Length: 142
Image (cartoon, rainbow, N blue to C red):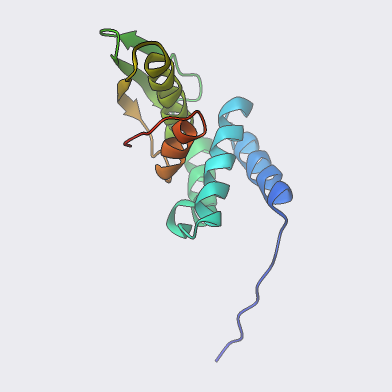
């Protein structure tokens, strides 16, 4: 039986490695930054299916332009508490983060915010977005 080798990498170093790999594949820096955050979030919580194990898949998909690397994001507010975020087939980690920011803004103004998202890639571990709202004193369903 082969012995398993564990490699420990500090969180900040791993995050920088993720970000570098994603930007080298062609992902814009702001999107790579958020995607790296989400992948670290997943691994730290034991959701390894949405963490570092997916790095090579994302990098290959990005480099083959499987995501729109120059998206035109659009948010349409349909009322005081509801809206739709158009992700233009971009990396879902960043799109979902931005959509939650819109929901939080509406909730700050009207008490509740609900955003549907159209056309985005895989968004990673969605608990990240509930925590994003919780850090602002809100409850979220993702």
